[in-house]
Image 1 (tube, one colour):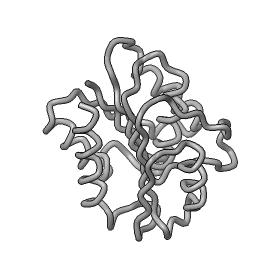
Image 2: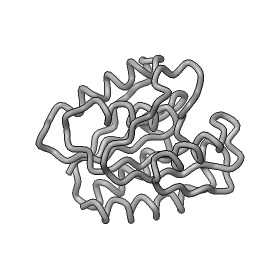
Image 3: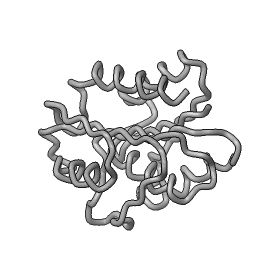
Image 4: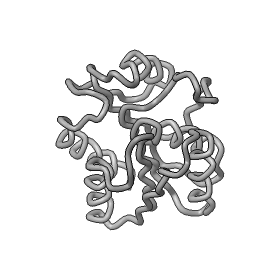
Length: 166
């Protein structure tokens, strides 16, 4: 199985969350990719770049994303032909102005969202709205957009998610 980790708008492939989850993917023996989107400002162009990593129709893939990375993971999952096994989304940048896709389609796979109550970048109501429409699992934590105080909880949830899909 392959896991693709997508960082957020102001982040990088070396962010704390991405590196921590990358360790877990390697620990469980899966292939991991961490595209670098820093030179690609547009969410739609980032989604197109991610689609280039989803060109193998035979390899089951888990998409993991933070903020804009969560948005592009969801958008790419609806456009790709690769079998998407699951989506693990942190502080997803859903329903924001400037993002082309507002009617978010959910693939037929498990989706888990973690969002902070004190997020001042993406309103927590957006995560609640999406999880209600998608009927997916949502964990609200006492944290802000970076979720830096929740890394242990994110790690534990991700490990359970990964094990369930392996």
